[in-house]
Image (tube, rainbow, N blue to C red; front, side, top):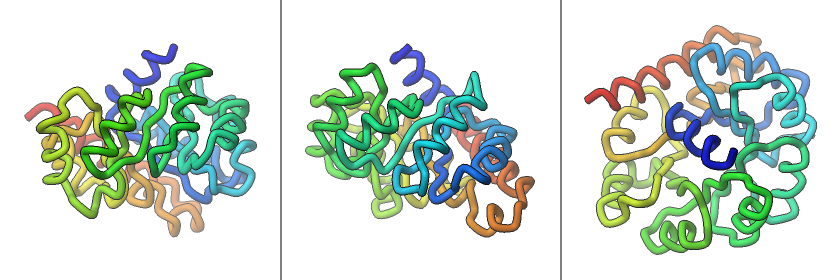
Length: 213
């Protein structure tokens, strides 16, 4: 189960991030994202009623992974696991979150920016390293990290969207994390789910095209 979830993240290539999307609209937003071809959804832990949202989305989908992001400590990690989170994402290297994920068989994508942080995260048991914030260094930074550390699957996040997702993949990213470039706040507020689907589809297509090169 654990390995299959990691494989699904890597094979799908896109993790769509839902930040601040409450349970009252999460199903519609998630349906729109999934219609665009995304197979992994991340609900950030700073979202109001996050456990309720994760539970609702977990019940909704059979073939789509539902995880939790912005997980800052072991207590939050366990709470979202119990709510149904199938993977955990952190913005920083936190040993407690990694340990909690490993203890209960939940994949962890740990946030790191430098080679030292990436190695520490991977040696501590992270399954993936979330290069964050990706926009600070861009695709060149991902390539620079991957050069000496090819064994570590990198998932750049922060400032990634359909226009540059392909460049990150070409730089060596195993997958990309995408927030507002897919789940646009205005689109959510206006119920423009077609726009969200189109954002998702363009990102998925960009990753697929880059992999074919």
